Figure 1 (cartoon, rainbow, N blue to C red):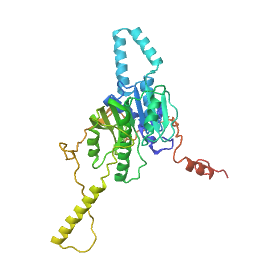
Figure 2 (cartoon, one colour; figure 1 turned 45 degrees about the horizontal axis):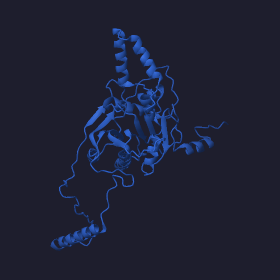
Figure 3 (cartoon, rainbow, N blue to C red; figure 1 turned 60 degrees about the vertical axis):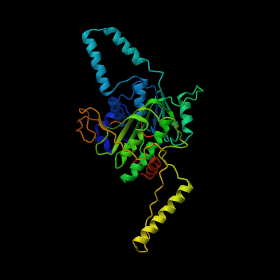
Figure 4 (tube, one colour; figure 1 turned 90 degrees about the vertical axis):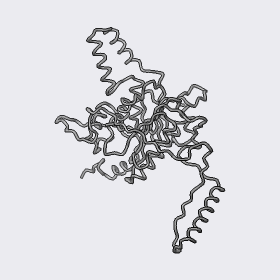
Length: 374
């Protein structure tokens, strides 16, 4: 979120700097929480692909510091106003509110993971790790309970993932890479979530994405596709909200055998399938003469599904829900700035952006970030 970004006309871009957020994506998580009450009863959270840390900042201010935003803040304000007007325990209520605000919660454990460094946040444990590597799970569990020798595998209430690849403009390719990133986050979440936990991740909507929803429905009782109002309508991004984690019986999650990579058939199955396909191709050519040009041979493996299990793949389309108050700002609109408006600096400049080396070379050459004087 740089000062020279073209998005400075965006209302949420300006609000993020005015309210002290590291990025405008903080409003997306706040609006998702307003709709699904994600933070209710949550004390242990894992934030994947967390850099620059806007979602971790929301977790720190809401779960640890006890701050409220959006509709929750308005409801608390209205409740306090009604108590004040009715005169019900006015002094005690005010004293209790000040005490709660002054004493942050100590029972909350939040771990943020990313390959990029994350600037420190109050109460947040940051890790530089690869979410696809099997060694990340014990590293994460140790960060959650550094003083415990317990081998409990399901200690987390909520797993978040706001990660996205560097888009290429080829929508099919971007959607595939994003789906693989989601599978990586899901595989880690399956290893650490406890029954009844929640999982929220970014997705790219497109063709055949309903198959992904059906796969998630195998592990969660409720799966909803949500579009926060702070997310631009012109963007294909959305968020998959999975509630009430209930894994299938005898399911064992492991990053060594992750989901989404498929299973390779045995050599005997491949040879039998190739022989059957070639025999069928010979019979077809004998009955219907064709030219000698090469053709594509499609190999279909025999179904190895155990008896009693349905063989047909059922596609389940998740419901779509728009999040955010209609009275909020429109992320695709440009609002007129007041005459005395002063542009603010970013709350947290990028710590290790991929373009850092390019900026240094440009400055050394006397470019836009280091004008030479004549």
